[in-house]
Image 1 (cartoon, rainbow, N blue to C red):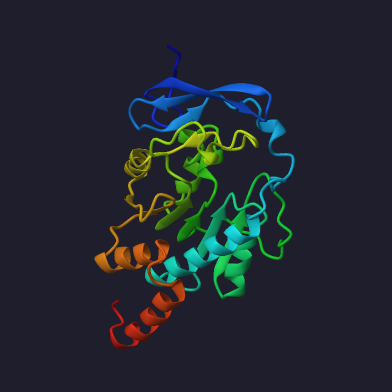
Image 2 (image 1 turned 135 degrees about the vertical axis):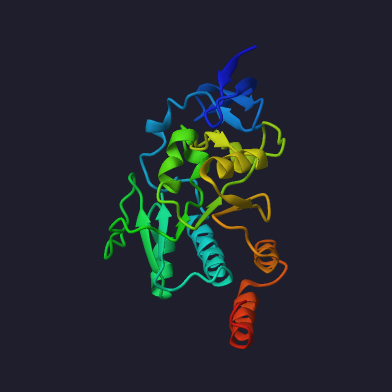
Length: 253
């Protein structure tokens, strides 16, 4: 039985299966005995993966970025984050989401150490962000215990991430993505709770994809509105329009 320490919580992780990464590497996958997360063995192949900021087989990159933008706009409204608050997309790739946010009057910036954004008209000057976005980042982190420190370093009020959480899927789960080899860590609900505890946050998981870390507990109304939007029960535009009207009558909402 092969064991390795979990790269998130350091508990013992046991090998449970193998997959052919990039069609040529026989890579071991481990499950943590504590947080339950799945991790690959040390990802020695990543220098072959990131030759392009967008994976060639990723045909929904723009669509997902627009979806993330819609989610963030909903969060900004529900959480009453003012227009001048700094929004930082940490590991934001080409910077599409912050560019869309800026076009809608938000003070948003992109930060990515490995990708050059075509939207370089503004640069983050290091001001403390009120919200940090890191959609589609967590699963790429080779050393999550260390790598996520930069996300929480400035103790933003909110951290919003999107990564499919592992819930006992089989080795043929498409999100493992051995054909591209970029996904190397897969978190459980328990893993997200441990991250929140480590950095002093509350955590809200409205579905199996989205996770919101908050310095203060969300109100019941905020949880219901975010849950309704992120589970496609109420259109985001309806919630935002309704909130705008309701706050004219009850500003504290």
